[in-house]
Length: 307
Length: 328
Image (cartoon, rainbow over all chains, first blue to last red; front, side, top):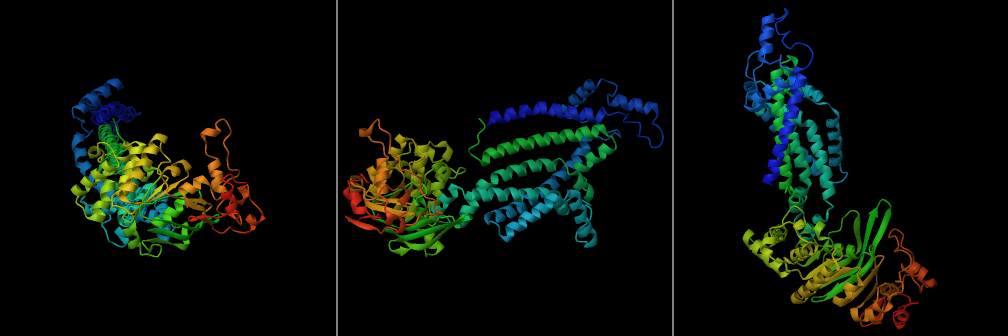
């Protein structure tokens, strides 16, 4: 197990270098000078452009630029934005908000998705089963930005039940954005749990548990659920990784000051240092989440061993 | 002790109604081994699942008959009462222990949960009892293995664990559904010996479901032979092997390899078992029977008494037995 974790961590090094290099190139090697549009209507003074090019090593060959960036990065120095703010500070401010939003969304997705899936998977073709199938199909077919704006318009502006935008990112204020962010995955979780339960409920070990005279509640709640939820939990794990990557659309609609919005604004303002910094963190988070999911998989299913 | 009478079960499927059991009756008493013999699809496992009350309903429906345990009717009993009889009165072990055991729980957990839930034992007591049970079925190093998962056991050890699990609540009757089919021949013999020994020591009733005449010959006191959801012959083991009373039993025995017929081709039963959606009229075996006459096509044969408690569902039962089992 320890060796496996070590090997996986080492495998992250080339992935990390590769992805950060790609991002760096994409951000800095695009045509056009990133500093020419920074001074409003006028052209920037040549001295300013020269100073900025010097600060971001833009006159070095691309590989050397990247090398310098990487050396700073591994020392924890993410650099500064073009307006001189520490990239690290901005990330540190935005990340906790995104983390909160991701946890709310994960909770919504898990509780509602699994409950709906289990209930419909246990009974074939009843009213509830059809209800779950149709409503999940509905959710899957609607893009998140539509769900988001409709929720904001109806509950926020017309009915006035919720604040249309998030003023301060507390857990309570993030419930509605969390629902919107989770809606699509919730539908997938419901369908995945339903299929998994329906498949496992005819399994031989369920019949054995029945023959042992166990109560139905225990057969479903312990024997059936524990087996059926293995794929669901791994799906939830990767999904959390995706949520942590920031939800550009949802955060945008509800004005949540999280990572998604940060990336979006930095791309619009061509703030290369910011984009590379944030995306680098996201790559790391996602790699760690995948490792966690793989380890969790071995905990849930004893037949899987990493030796 | 356990009696099945005139049991009828249907599977209602999209293709029609399959009449899987058509009046099955047998009984087993304490300390007795009853072998239920038949090909796949003859209804031997369905009978067992109907006794346990673990048929998949739908599609299976018990349409007629009676299952009694110590005289108490089980088919109409409350779900709670049926659940109470499972594992404590009648326990069951299954063919493929790898899929019949839950893969994500330890063997110990799966034995202990019944003890904790039904006997109110503490974790420690249940663990100690589980180790004893694994010892009883001769699993070496039971104290360590109780913490292992089913996939860490070999095939034979898994079946032993399954037996230990079934014995946890000291059942009076054990139904073993093809307990050795998935195992190597040498391991098969060990498991059969173990079952026979446990059955003797505990004076348990044992219902042994199998398609293997060889297994039956060694341990069974009485044998019922099933074909197309009916019992075609019922006899004590000795007389059945000496002189089968039904052409189907006779044909089964002729299809066994024998030492003195080395070098000759093995006999087979021509044709296939009938589809349960369309059971032939009259005697269901008549299309494959070497003795079939006109009456076999038109009339369902009654159970003919052959003495010594033997019965055979054949119009010509006396002739079959008289013919020394050679058949037509």
